[in-house]
Image (cartoon, rainbow, N blue to C red; front, side, top):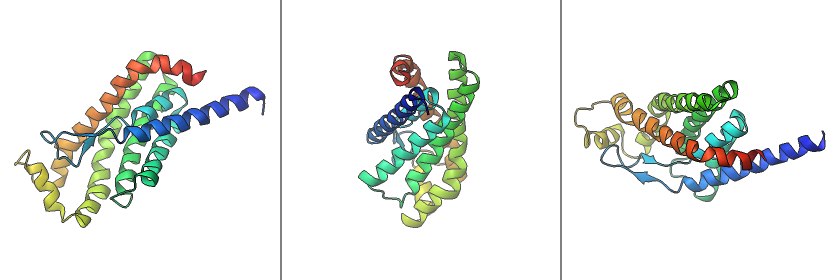
Length: 200
């Protein structure tokens, strides 16, 4: 391996580690919006570093950042969900940055970045429905008192919802989409100056 390839590989690994650490820290900066969604669903920007990594280094690195972020969260903060919450966070985030990274690699323009990131945000919102329906919420229901308590939290906001699928389609999917779009907005504001540093 040539010296230039070694330097490039070392740079990628270093940047991946740094972005993973930033993503982990951003997981602590989360807010609840109980007026529009139950407070156990929180908003944060922890997918932003992974999106930056997917654009600057490639989709695989974006997915690795998502994985490392959640592993760091389990190691240093612990988990209250036997890792299920972190698994869901990883799957949704990986869908976001993988789709965005693959499209951006093929359409490597500013317009391509916009298309890629919007597609990634939409993919994350779509994936959130089966992931929460089949994995996350059934686990939470078994641990925290039954599915009726979860649905009741949504009914406190919109009494007409009667099933978990309705809750996910009306609340979680749009919320997840907005979360992704916020990552996209911030990414477009800071990516250009950061990319010069990341790529050397």
